[in-house]
Amino acid sequence: MGQLSSSPPDDSATENPPINRRRHGLVRSFYFAFVGLGYFFGGGWQAVAVLTALGGSLLVSYTRARGESVGVLCKVGIMQRAERMLLLGFPSILDPWISSAIHRDTGTIVSWAVAVIAVGAVWTSVHRTIWISKALTGKP
Image 1 (spheres, rainbow, N blue to C red):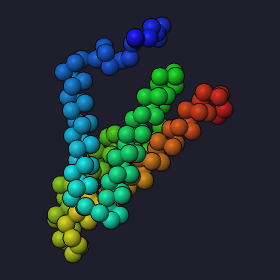
Image 2 (image 1 turned 120 degrees about the vertical axis):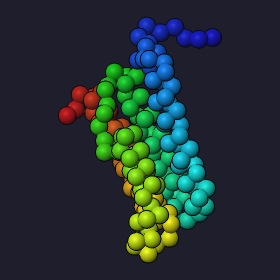
Image 3 (image 1 turned 180 degrees about the horizontal axis):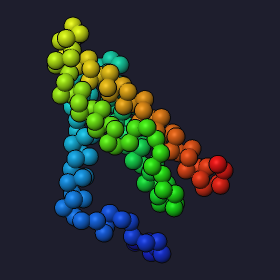
């Protein structure tokens, strides 16, 4: 049985549905790109970086949503969605040319970018968790 709640509905219910669908489709394609990269690298530190980046990216969104659910608007952090998408997109496009110019295997630049995303996403999720905790307790 569903629960009755006195809280207002979330903002996604009042957004423009076509725009909301496009945004969610773009986010899904971002996560599928991580799965594809994990398959491409197959093992080693690159696969660990891909899984950490994917998990960290999910945690960044989750911590923001959880903060908003308790009344704390949380947009802090260095690796939000736009930054992650740009940091994955541009290296993915430019990797063949840059890798050959520096005499490295194809995928080198993308693997470095994914490692940066992994560290930044985990850092952002931890930073948001601490920030939300301090906001709820009233500490600066």
